[in-house]
Image (cartoon, rainbow, N blue to C red; front, side):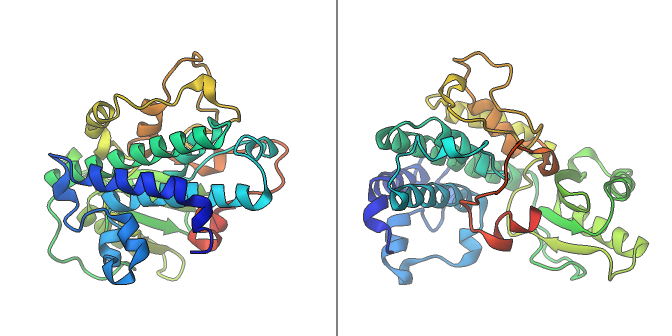
Length: 322
C-alpha cells in the first residue's frame, strides 16, 4: 500500500478500535468473522469473503475508513493541511454514509483534530451498521428462495431505473395496499429524475419488481438488488435510532465546529442550518442514514464546477449520479 506511511496514524488506532468494538457484549454476534482490519490489510489469506465484507456491520465503518484515508492521502500529496483543502470547495456532502465523513472532515483544523474526527466518524458508522443489522435480522427472517426476476443477490434495497417517480410511487402504493405495515416498501433514494432506490423486505421488493416488469416493457425498466444487508433511509429502521444514540452518547460533532457547509441529502440544506453553535449533529447524522429519504437531486452548491469523490470513484461511486 503505497500511501501506508502517510495514513498509519489514522489506520492503526481505528483498526484497533474496530476490533475492540466488534467484540463488545450484545453486538459480537454481528461479527462472526471479527473486524480485524489491520490483519486483513497485511494478509490476503486472512481477508473474509465479499459476502461478509458487504454486510452492514462491516461495510459501514470500512466505507468511512477508506474515505478518510483517501482524503488524508490527497492532502499529504498536495502538501496541505486538513483545514486548507475544504476551503477550496463550495461545500461538502455525502451520498448516504458519506455525509458522516463529510461532517467530520469539516471540523478538523489540524492533523491531530483530523484523527480525532476520523475516530468519531468511524465509530458512528460502526454503531449504525451494527444496530441496524441487529434490529432488521430480529424482525425479518430471510426468505429461503426468491425467484430470479431481478438482477443481483436479493437484499433489502432495490435500485430501479428508467421510470418516473410518479409511476414508481403508484406501484409502491399498489404493492403495499394489502400488506401489514411492517412488510411495506419505501422510497429511499432519489438519485436522478429516473433513478431510485426502494427499501423494504426482500419478498415485497421482489413483488414490486414483478409488478413493474408487468406494467412496463422489461427492456425499459432496470431492476437491481444492491449489495447491502439493511433497508437504509426507511421507516423500517426508525426503532434503531434511540439505541444508536445511546451507543454514541459520548460522541459529538458540534454545529459550531463546521468550517465548511455540509449539505444533508434529505433536505439539500446545511446540516447546521437553524441550530445553535453547541448543538450536537450526531442525532441528525444517525437519522440521515437510518430513516431519512435521500434526495440527491436537491443537493446543490452554487458556483461549484467540479465534484471530487473520495469514495470508490467512477460508476462505483457517485459518477453515475452526476
